[in-house]
Length: 280
Image (tube, rainbow, N blue to C red; front, side, top):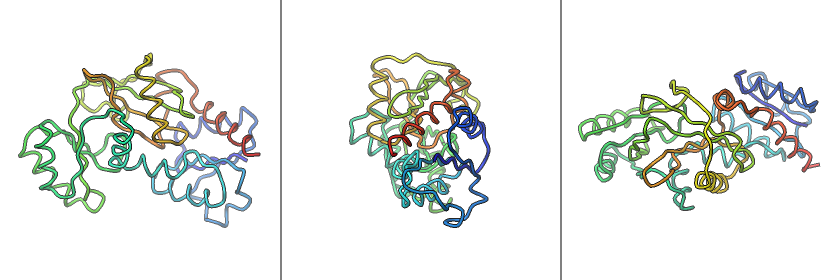
């Protein structure tokens, strides 16, 4: 059985439902807000495949770990979700695997964060260790601004007690987003914006982009290092070649579909069904 769990009916979840239905898959499609563990999960167990599509990272990880305890194969596994939900852990893994990325630092106090920024040289970007959609990013160009932002973050609660800082990359107004499925590139789009943040959630314009051998090798090595089944990889251009900016372990994909015309929902259902068959 294929299970699709969600917390909000976005375009992605509707596409997954349509694809599963059109393929005649045996599946259930349920809002986690209506469910209680273990009462409402009778019959869910070993040999099943699940897509956990909760908007909340915390809900996704909790549900995935519960399902994995029953022997369910989840897309993505909880270890991948945990890794991708932590920018510092992801950066450390990329470094371990010699995958190029913007210069970065991690600090545990406002004073150390300022020291880290000074050591890299301005401009730098402060990022929350956990977060998406380009939220709570701060581009900082001088020490006074850095001191102010670091002090503000220090009072924003435990989630901001670790400072993740990247060297700002001048990327000519665009970046790339690759959707990886089963360690292979499913879609690749260019996101352009006059703003330094080039997320489509912040208004960037998407369009299809043609890959090249250098880029494809980088994406493949990144997917193999991170693991999991379904990833979105953000890539920056630099004078020295492509670098990996971030890896998302539970991405939205409607922007990629709109830009490329590729049915990502259908590809995901095909992949999930092939996993299910391999478990039988």
